[in-house]
Image (tube, rainbow, N blue to C red; front, top):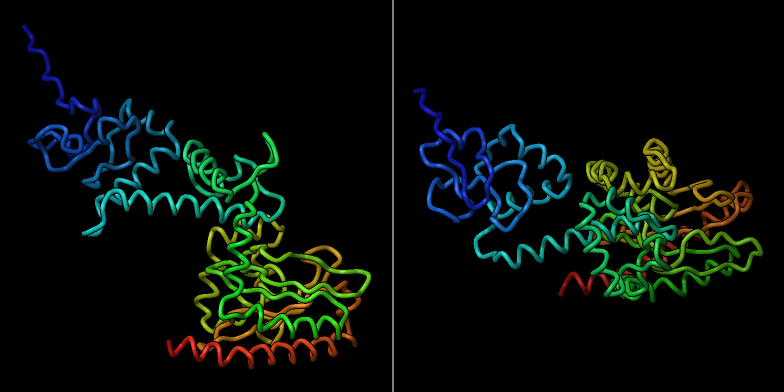
Length: 358
């Protein structure tokens, strides 16, 4: 009588096959301590329905019926894999609760960054999922939580998601960094009165540019391209280009251009990287930024406001219809903007010196 082949041992708690290398171990893998055995834990905890891409012992998963289920899990099982890898590398003293809080903040930031890059047009739910890299379930849960606290808004069922007004208050508070908004506002008013055009103050916030002040000009045709509180990726708009182009470290410029969220923001506005690079090179060559038709029918000129370390902390820009920023008027406007920028930097020096001494 032919002997029946021995049944392959697998974890009774998770009912999953071990990975190829753990399968040949003298002791079978276990489910996060669910049963005694091999120290290489190849499976998720029993209460989790999805399986990670790799087991925590870093071995490749086996081919079989469970792999097709993992593939159908899409981004969900990828998130589980990242979470398990993070637990394996969790620093000493970090509790699981703190790790989960950090992960939630990261997911919320990914959603808010995607919505900020989209601007006032907002995003559909499928676009939020695609740009944030989260699964549909996770994105839906995070959007619900952010909406409950006023960070994300939706005009109605089925409408696009946009940044909530609660963030506007935070943006204005952040715009007062170093007291820069109060310092710059009188100078901006004087520049606006002298030119009749709209003047903007833009600050760098992480890897983004945020408009913190706008003084509207008296000219009948106004270029209102952004409003206070609007966030853009660096390299879109005269002020934003100035913040990027005049960084001292070329490697930092390349890092910012290569960021996925920066690329997504440019794509959403129909601007390719080659065009941004042209603006950067022209700005570094000429000493100022001149951007035409980022918004159809408008042009902008921008100059950086440098901090103590020599990198831009803000940018002063002026927007108008193209005919008002063409020679010979361009030279006079540029002179006025240069003078205003120098005055703001002069007023900022005592504030920055005090903060550096603290």
